[in-house]
Length: 178
Image: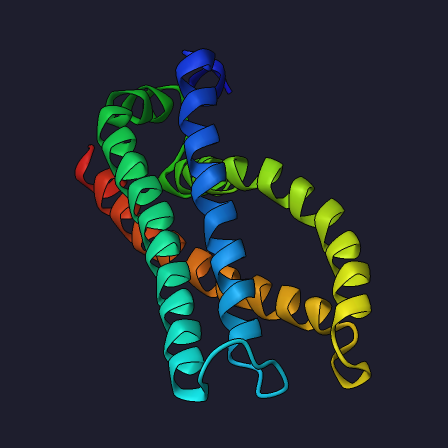
């Protein structure tokens, strides 16, 4: 817990940047998915499909940046915390207990930048859905909720993949310290 609250100002700034990156990912996903809908005609059909696909690619780029930098930060911290893990071992903790603790820290650090973005996301989705229902045809009402669910699944996929990478690295560091 001390490592999470240490240097709070710097952590807050970094988490704000991650939150903005995550919000950009959300917004580009929603715009891209809307542009891929055949009922919406903003541009030439082919041009609109390419622009929608480009928005989805931007969304993926922001997600990769978000999770890659968080993962790299975690891997660096794991290496720096090797001495702390050694101390935990000296006071009687076994590898399994240390792995559980490290996994919790990784999960907290991956989730903490998302918290503010999710709060904004949860307040904006109902408002956006109401406004979009006024603009879109009846067949597309509540489409924003579907996009939110798809984005949640997409984020969960990236979260699990990157968590597994950092988890594997953490096990390497824990085993190497004896």
